[in-house]
Length: 325
Image 1 (cartoon, helix red, strand yellow):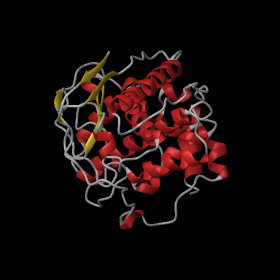
Image 2 (tube, rainbow, N blue to C red; image 1 turned 90 degrees about the horizontal axis):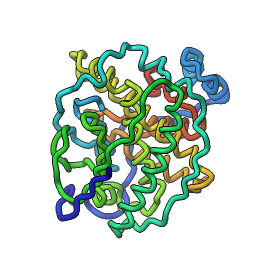
Image 3 (cartoon, helix red, strand yellow; image 1 turned 180 degrees about the horizontal axis):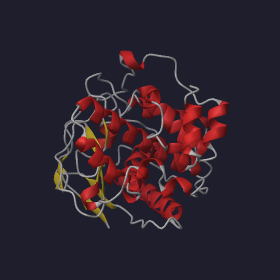
Image 4 (tube, one colour; image 1 turned 120 degrees about the vertical axis):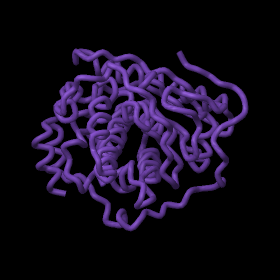
């Protein structure tokens, strides 16, 4: 059930007004686009062919996946001890997952309710309505895979609290997913402050669908293996490279849902651009803390998910390094 926590608290305040997009040096390059050849190959859902076409152009209980401030990478919250629930998967769970064989997500009937970001009751209602849509869409996608799918627990907070993954909020963190209790955590007021006071409902839906995608990864066994493999890496750069693949896959899977809800939401050209700009702004803006991918790649994978609509297109684990930097 959803957990509603009423009261004061929340993440430290941030300057109001629109965030300024200033990508770091490594992201200042022409935006990468998926060419026609790439799209044709990826639609087959075959990872190997998808990789060759690409060449043409949270963690479980470690610090969990986050959607943080639009201008800075969020800080991690403390880890929690793993359980047996996600153990036993081999490396094939990343690149040959049953989820990739489910085909395109069916069109989702999900009309976005009216949203006033200044009204916390309106924001909470919006988040719950959209999470209902995500629950239904992903439960249907998992049916027939042989994998169980359980809806995440919702903790949409107003006051500071503690999850199995640590206390919240932490500076720069408005939302995160904690695999320990399958908890989807969002600060009802914090996500507005940390989203430059956005007036666009679709931007908040992208943030929500990204965090929900980490739950999808968990249910598919991806997070369990990712955490173990990441923990075995001695080099921090290698750990960050794995984390970026996980985060960019969440962008793609989140985009997949948004594309499936395009007609009923509705999401037209303007709304899609708002989503993609938000994906850019939630990328890495520090060359020293690169855990979510460059702004360009954050946009690329989100757009790819919206366009292809198939989980097989979201295999970031097989993608070449250039598109997961």
